[in-house]
Length: 204
Image 1 (cartoon, one colour):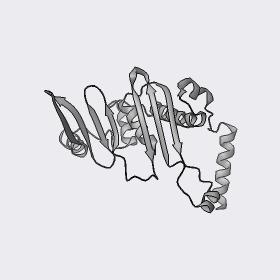
Image 2 (cartoon, rainbow, N blue to C red):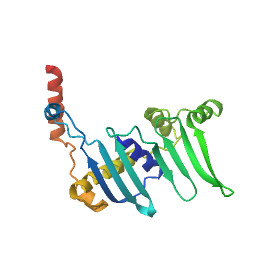
Image 3 (tube, rainbow, N blue to C red):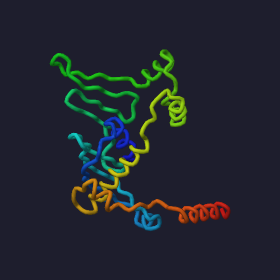
Image 4 (cartoon, one colour):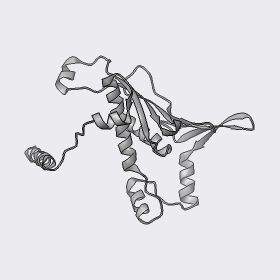
């Protein structure tokens, strides 16, 4: 679940270089023992992380699907000139800043702005879906988003959180890259796996 928020913040931060990661995960809630054993259930209900990037940037991560709390407020991003709260379940964001020594907050209705950009200013559909974006990038109308790079950094952060939990310490970028083991299938393994899937599909 946390991947969506981590990757979004990485994009907004221009995908900075990860330096160190620390984290903790919890699987403490009571689960029906027979169902747990049958299913092989091993998912944590709470994950926490803290990431240090280059240029003094840090990220604080908390994600859960089963704790004694109703909900989190959403993602926040802040610096020395202002801050933004991206609401989790709403179509707006809040901008916090200072004007003439007065603290201010502004609600921005993203859905209305998107409608105006498209319908009034004819900015097109370049962000409507990955497919729309890909086509507009091929047409030279927009720069392609660095989704592969952001996905790799998101995975690196997640791996760092699990390694930090396992090793009970903060881990460096070098440690994450050295210790992590890929579970990706290669060559003959992929062919064998695909054939097994095909066989299962035919049998069912």
